[in-house]
Image (cartoon, rainbow, N blue to C red; front, side, top):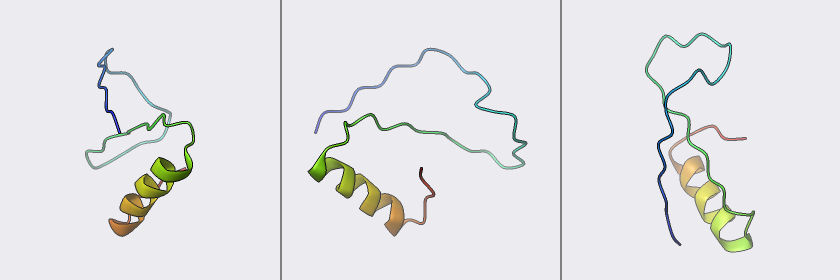
Length: 51
């Protein structure tokens, strides 16, 4: 698995109001049969919502 990070600036992600600090992450993996299920398993383990 390779990981690349690119910071292109900060902007509003939507119209919703957030009281706590939060981070929005995107995983652009394909989808791939192996990688997608591994990522979803880790997110589920830590109760991280994902769409």
